[in-house]
Image (cartoon, rainbow, N blue to C red; front, side, top):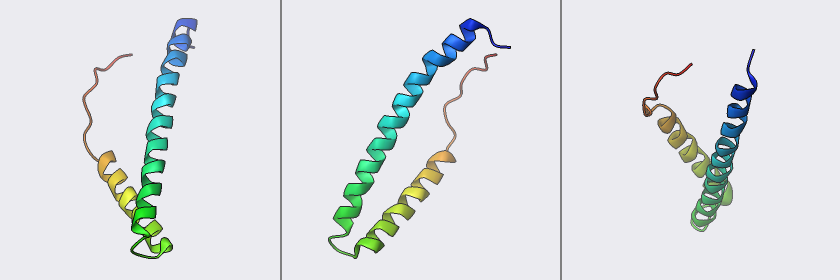
Length: 75
């Protein structure tokens, strides 16, 4: 059972996490849109979209597999 204080801490931590999600996700979306448009000037749009999608998925997979900073264990 959570106390009111722990619920308040969780709620206050949720906003910065959501803001990072919006800013990073939006930034990636805009960047990939520009990359597709730039690449489409040399190859067909469908191929440009597929190439950028694959590149983004590979980059995301490599970032997920990297060890992150160690965080102290808290309860």
